[in-house]
Image 1: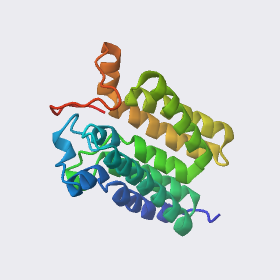
Image 2: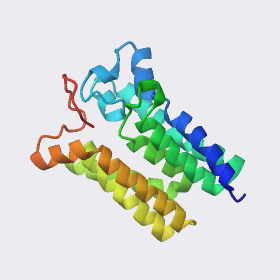
Image 3: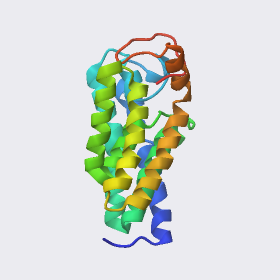
Image 4: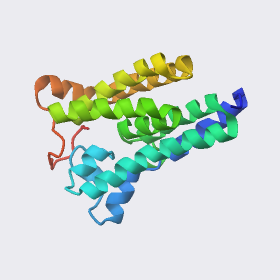
Length: 209
């Protein structure tokens, strides 16, 4: 594997950001003729809010798009500039999704993009992330709780079994902290018992999942 230089990492950051900032939730709902997803439910552009349109196919398309844009960023950067640049591209894709320039820096919570970056960096750990998410979701039907639990498991497992435990674990630990910050309103609603469950439709825009 090619070692990344500082210039390689600098080059990987805008690549990751631009790919990560592609707003698949907005694009697929508009193309399907169901309107702007930002005007329904939580007003968020991610999979959970797209699911509130009642269109599971659109939610699935959003999930896949938001994951693979980060995976692509990692793979492209790795091939061009090496492993450290790949990590930088994955982290930048997460930032691009959360703060997309095309939507005045108002994006999603970053769960699918986090997972996509993890797929590119260490796909076995991504399977663990998905398993934790699915397990918590099956038990609680809370998307936010599932994401929070999975984001704790991922950097811990990276530190234990990854081929590059220090750098990868640190990067994803930082992304996990960011993900928790992005879910601070969800955490408050979970504590108050007011959080929306997976598949629950919600009409007025609010700050949500």
